Amino acid sequence: MKQYEIAFKTLAILSDGLFHSGEMIANELGFSRVSIWKAINDLKKLNVEIFSVRKKGYRLPKAIKILSEKKIVEALGELSQFVNFELLNVIDSTNKYLLNQSKNKPHATVVCSNLQTNGKGRRGRVWQSALGESITMSILWKFNFGASQLSGLSLVIGIALQRVMQKIGIYNSSLKWPNDVLVDANDDLKKIAGVLIELQGDMESRCSAVIGVGLNFDLSTKQQKKIDQLATSITSVSSKSHDPNEIVSLIIKEIVNVLSDFEKTHFESFKTEWLDSRAFKDQKVQFQKGSGEKITGNIIDLDDDGSLLLLKDDGKIEKLLSGEVSSI
Image (cartoon, rainbow, N blue to C red; front, side):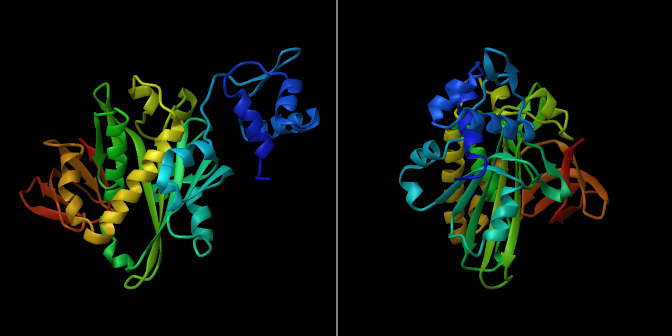
């Protein structure tokens, strides 16, 4: 039995946001009342808010959508034969899990979690996530060439996420170099998704990439206050109702597609698509280097390795390999 399995089976019943008695939950799941009571306590220890009312039972503050391994695998169709998919109830970090297990896991292993307690972002940041509010997942991809040939990989994953946005009807999204997806919400560009890639292996022979993806699905006000930048979520910017299981399957499909092409053509064939989807078009930006130095200018192009080409205020073009872009 998976960790927290009874707790998450209980949660699936409570996910409609209505009251359910402990007796009813026990009968439906085939467990004892004591097991359900323990499951409720386990959920509360995971900071899941549950109301308990005498003679009514338990309920969540609102209805939520949780992930189902069965639904995701079904949505993957034939691709489920290629992808090794795992859904974890609770994990500290899907990236950390796959980095530790990479030697024992097959190529194209995808790990997704219902609740990630200590997710990582770029540059030492924390990826904030909460139950039913974020999609957090990681993909293990084993390349037959070295890490020196993976330039532009994060931009390619950004393209995959941009394609997902288009497919679910969010047409005002754009890509922020190197790997954030932004959405224009009320004239502000707000982050909806991000990517963290961690590499293992050799620079010149074989290597593996663990590709972490975080996507805001249904952010609460409480969760937004924890995020140190403008952020939004799918439910906030879409007029349609979305199933997170379908979105997970779409992300997997698009990432597998771009990685398969990237293995053949590297970044060069993706450059035009990325530039067409870029944020801050015809707008001056500030670029902060890893050293802390800040320069301003306009993004005019990408190099074939995915490096940013910035036309600076002094008229010179500088090639930038790493750092942070922001609007002015």
